[in-house]
Image (spheres, one colour):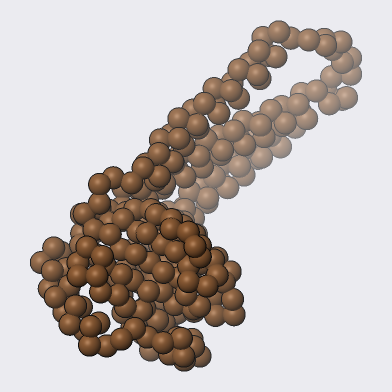
Length: 279
């Protein structure tokens, strides 16, 4: 029996090592701003909110793993030590005050330890700081429209571009924002409920017709970041990606000057062109 217990312990240790190696491999595969092949971890964070989400996720993973191993150890001890062969005369003990207090108090303390960072994260997500830039996002079947009321009030549509990479994530016109600036997203739906989600920014909010919802992000890294509509909104739901390009202040000012001319001369894409892009 001792040999069996030792062998079982070595197997559990092997599983734990394999699990940690798998997590490390998933992190190695992770790419900035987009999904990666065989990725099973969260995308790398590009905002303070997403970095907090990742920390909270990892904290819960460690806590849940520790609880699971503890319960497993208790089960093994019970099976080995208190079976009929090893313990032919069972104990008649019915109450143990210390154990009853412990199994009540310890779970309460664990839940409080989870609640504190959870509420802090929720407050960080919901409390929109003073914005440096506002972008109004309108979900339509099946593409997105972006308006910049603080920068000349121009508006443009962003449709799937099937010739761009990454596949099903490239668009003809990206949302462009400056780095290290608080961007307030105000979103609504033009027809049905959509959901504006960018994993690397840690944002996901419904775009509901007749209602204006808002969230925020502050990208701390430049580059391209992708998301998708996360609410089943019709037959081309899978073909309305979100692409956000984060640039320097100077590049953003240059883009704004060009966008005012481009989207003033070229009217917004039509519903028909949206259907063509999804074909």
